[in-house]
Length: 66
Image (cartoon, rainbow, N blue to C red; front, side, top):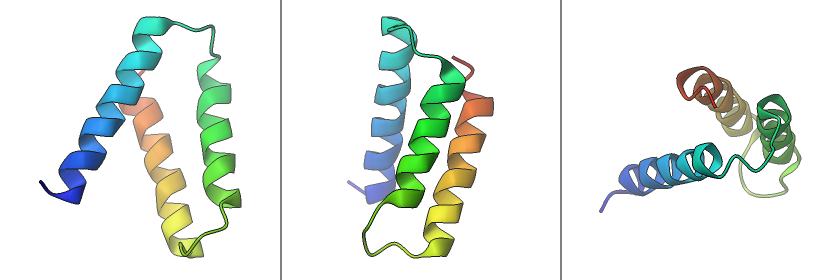
């Protein structure tokens, strides 16, 4: 199984859980918290990867209206 397939599966799982549970999340806060987490992460990812990840979170916010 490719890494992209695994990522896609996890993305759908997490967003479906959020939708179904309705745990009182404020969607804007959820995505903003995720973006802050990505940018503050201390790992091997460089600035360009983090910037791409944040851009992808913005994309998901549009594609997966919660």
